[in-house]
Length: 503
Image 1 (cartoon, rainbow, N blue to C red):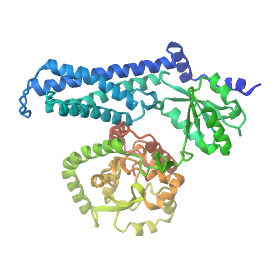
Image 2 (image 1 turned 90 degrees about the vertical axis):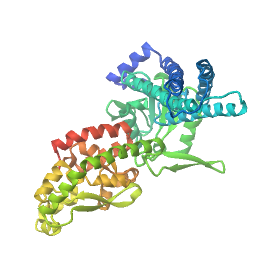
Image 3 (image 1 turned 45 degrees about the horizontal axis):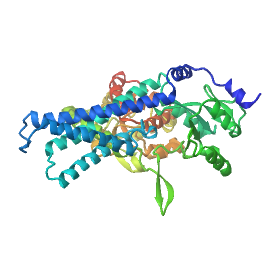
Image 4 (image 1 turned 135 degrees about the vertical axis):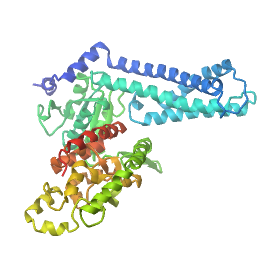
């Protein structure tokens, strides 16, 4: 049997595949994207128009004292300006690629481009007002139109994006993809892309010359053929995305052959992984030096808008929390002092972002002579070396047990958040001795700030194995969004009350 014929029998009819097939029958994929882009244009027109009208209402109809300019509030004039400016903004958006499928649904970068487009449009208005003395606009209206124009347009696009994400669960707006290479990197790519439905990829299978056709490498995913059968498989399954796991291609000539065949194809998008996907989560940048494109590794996972959103969430929640919890923390400090001799705050030396060590603050929950107590229990040494925790730790004070069960001992880490050493949500804090436990993943761990809470906190804390903790940390880093942080913060409260795995 020909490999391409045999591969047809390997496409297991999963519920998602059935949804995709039905969606394509109802509305062809190219039509789906035309509808989305048309909806974007309409939404942009409506939201910008509403923004300009609201700016006029606030500037001229509310009679606020902050606006001291005495200008003629001719609504017809501002309607005319809006009617001219909206098409100009749409043209700017088009030139910036904001209606280009490749640049849509790709994280916060789209909103950054919207901001730049609105700003450029307003700069054109300002330039015209300088060149034509008779063209006079209220500065208050211009400022409000700029702010509302960005906010409303971003809200409109954000809402449409949620609709697309919901439709992807029903089989719409998904691109069929093949991964070239069924090695560890290829498998990691498939798990990540299929597990993250918002990616828009639907992985059908793998292309690999080392494994025979029919080899199952992941649940419901098989090797469908080799590179020699790639053209036939692309045509048979209407493949839109070809993802090259570069570490799986041993021959440079073979890689060049694939690029020559599909690199400039109008029907297939050829994408190549870095070859370091398993150990790098920060992303790569391409910068030209003397017209030579060189690839660099980002030192941190979050940059730009993402970093601003995460830091804003930390500050907006931490400052009120410290004010409200201040009296409780003073009371807890008094209880610790009365319970056993020793300092109130324990400083634990841990690893921070980019490998910078810092002291994580905790309320002391152990006796001051904890090392001496542990020496009397040699049977617990192996447990400590393996998990860096002991379930029934004799070093913990009676008050300390309550603190750990309720996570009260971690409240001082709010000051670490203010010092930008930690975040409210993030991977577990680890000591320098624990780094080797992360093996090849330690590079990823240092690309974000550790958190007071995180996936490990809501998943059982100390009850999960160390290998599971590493997996949870890597999942968080790879899949971070501000919404994930908010979700984990809400899930932390019941997790603390359940006290599962806290010791």
